[in-house]
Amino acid sequence: MSTAVHKAATRFKNSRWWPTGVATSLVGVAVVALRGCWHRKMSWPIEVQGCKYQVCMSCGIKRLFNETTFSAYGPFRYDLDELIARAATAHTASVSETPRSSA
Image (cartoon, rainbow, N blue to C red; front, side, top):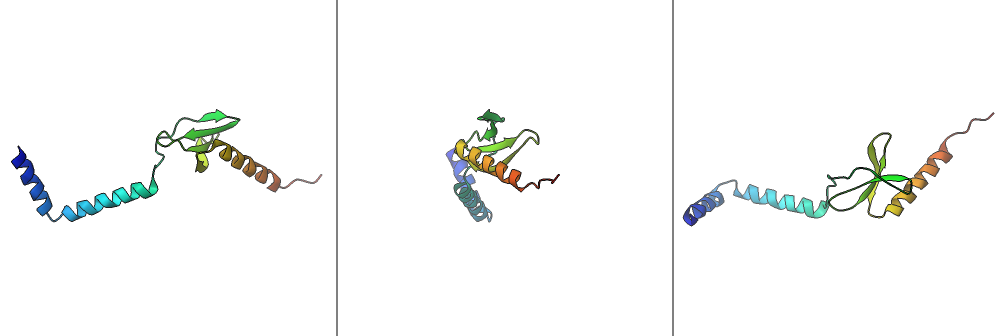
């Protein structure tokens, strides 16, 4: 059995695709190392302190969630209080920018 494995490994290393396979693997490792978690597995929306958010099941990062459009918005942050403060600041800024009608 070990001679069959040795022959297969030798055949792979002698093939012209071996450098391409190694380069592709190294690029994949570099992307994962530099990018980190891709946040693919997000939880269902959770409501705390009047704000709805989702949590990444892989790394624990949080993102605000809008139930009317059923979509996440804003930046990813680990601190929920920072997310809530940012949402409150954005809400007060949007309210102060709306024009008021004069009677």
